[in-house]
Image (tube, rainbow, N blue to C red; front, top):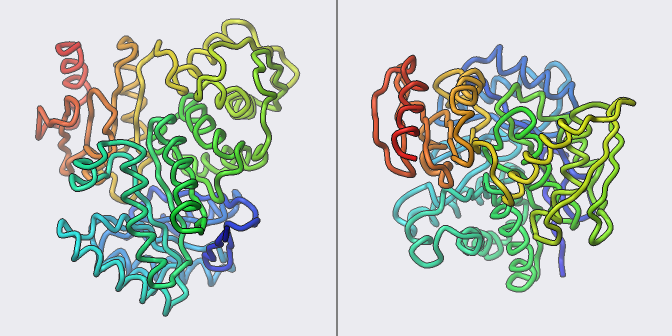
Length: 430
């Protein structure tokens, strides 16, 4: 078996190298000053790799300026161009960024055209020493794949294996792969299956980028991320990680660092009684979710007891019970609260998604077990909210679209009325 590595501007992942922590700017890439400032903050927080939205040629040009500014300040953190749909933007960005993140299937509805564009991208990446991430999320499977395999981990794996085979055929190996999902069980199963499939069919293991996409914010976002990412890290799967929170992206870095520090540790098999000693609340959420979550997620245990000390204070039973409810829900075992699927925001986001998510969570807290998506733009919604019962998606121009399942049922809603109309939609359909 050959284990490959990926070099992103001097940060090497895979094949025994340290796990790298990533995050993504939520600024408009065209806003050079804000983007440089946020990259500066992320680098100072210890982020190893930084991604920025790069929708088209103007953003590629802005990315080049951002990179020049950072390098002039002595900040060498590699930059990743985040591309959706626009193959020409990917070709241009590969000459600027240290890495390009793509879902090649989005390049064209014609699979043969998408394959040709992808092959061309590999040639440009080779010439420029640029890495790529093939990022295929649960909600972005095309009809060609879902008609054969359904909206499943198997479908995710079969889709990405097509693109990896092109890389192998062209002997281009500077590649990282991700198969993210907001559902922690789907996410963990997809990565496990991909690892086995690479071994069996290619005899090669490409580095894996782990993440629970659209994890949300606050305690639940941290718990869900720790369950999904932690389950895989405990099994030795994963070479670089991103914790996606609908918050300031700087907040993602310490959570990911804590998970990196726990990588490889496992709770004894069959354990149902835990003691957790944590330095602060976030440390508790990450450690407890990492240690207990995998066994719950895989059904090896059905319940647990927990004692926890945070900064020298023993957590009272009501706090333990609240955490337990959140963890059970993150592990898809018991639903006692609404489930929120929210993208972290990026340069494409069309409104203040951090404030909006808080507003939605407050207005919908009565709807236990209902899955509610809050998405910044059409790139992430509706596809990436595939598991949601209801959704709120930014249209731009101060308007939003509301979804019931995958179907848009109210378009052009003024943003100031969006939350109220969402609550009405949910109440009238449950």
